[in-house]
Image (cartoon, rainbow, N blue to C red):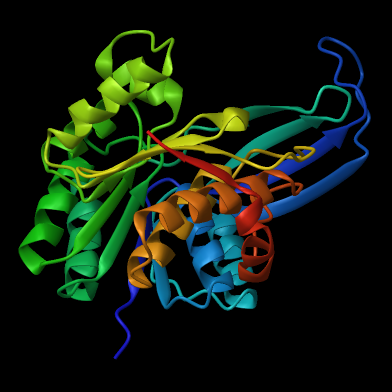
Length: 312
């Protein structure tokens, strides 16, 4: 039996992406293109894993008419889900893409309110689905009413079941989650700087910060550096990865694609250097697409050898 991957999005969204020819603040802007997608880190990871033919279920909280829309779209895409429905309304996140500068501006709503009973029900749902060696992906912001310790508590619960956890979060939720020793973390540079409370100016600075995470008991640290690539580290190896050139259309979901590619590599038992290449290729392909469209397995396989990978 194939072990499922479970992705969790505590604060999902409708991602509304509008493209403007030249974004002018304080002036009238006319939209050239618009698309609407189900959004949230766990949902985006599930989209990619579905493209990679990995058995995946996505869960988390969901609410209101927009929540029904999210579930309808996931059903159309063939992505299994089992959300906990709560009171309120699922948020809308606006992404403004400026074609002149290739800069994406994000305006994210806060989301619904969560009760202690809601949290208890979700924990029960996740606990029933996790088995030995299955993988749980945690990521994204927390809705109102959810304590910053929730990722830590979920990681501890999954450890009891013998599963692995990949954590992609920021702020206090990231700090708390690290204390429970997830298998993998994927901070971007800003999140890593926030964690170590200092500016990371050089590659050596970044490596030392990554080592701090490894020393916490984490097995793999994947640090995304935006257009400059990534660094991936474990207790034996470290690689500096440079992506192939693209014209970026939307960076939304690029980091989530890196997480999904890493899950795929873990399941396929690929070498650590292959993990470095796959994660970079997946994130780069997704960044070349508009809205929250994600990479496909064929696209990544075709471009994997274009990634430059240096052992450090």
